[in-house]
Image (cartoon, rainbow, N blue to C red; front, side, top):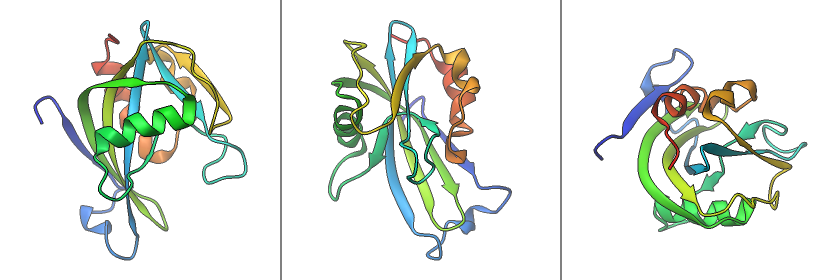
Length: 153
């Protein structure tokens, strides 16, 4: 797609590290903008990567497009309807026991009334504040990309 970026972030391992030994999870992520701020949510404590902040999103259902997944996940996690504006990036990351492929989309919301429905907390932050929050490793290359690219609609 025009204007999209493909990033591979694998802890200094070659891309071949994305193998059958580490199952691949296809995930769609929304960078949701409203009033010049970006929506992030905190994962519930006790779960995988509990307490870390993230952009709303989740695993694609069978046969679901990444854009449809983003809209569904944002509604389920924080109760907002969003409009997908564009694909920002594809990020591949290998953890010790699984790998993720993140399809990242810039989205806009008509409301800032986000609720912590399937997360611990929500926050609307300025793009330059994203570095103040602890995110999962797979999101590391996304933070500077969002900060450089983003002028929220």
